[in-house]
Length: 148
Image 1 (tube, rainbow, N blue to C red):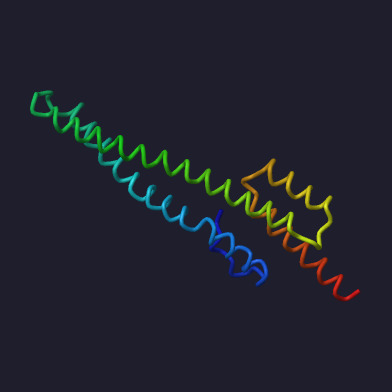
Image 2: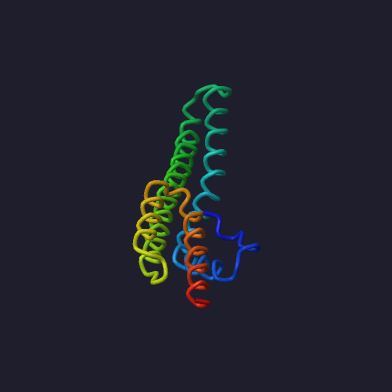
């Protein structure tokens, strides 16, 4: 979910996306840190382990280096896996927020709300697109009701 590209969006959509960002922002920061640290740790570990195993003669003096680089690699892979879990958590929290927001709408009919919710549950990767589509429909119906 790329929330930061809201330059060309109307103000009412930007406000809703800012509310969504407030709920998932802290988790996004953690995920970014985990990904930031996992890549260098994995790269350094794999490079040095490969060098030690394939290009250096095996001696008892190289065992501590192998253990250290293995631990560094394990930490890197653990951070990468935790980042994947955090991404799924972000997706879950944002879907819950969007579904709650859709059900709280008084303007859009129950049928259309259920349509958006089923589309959101069947294709969670497009949640932001469906949410923006819902907000546009809600705003149009509000304006129609205002002028009728």
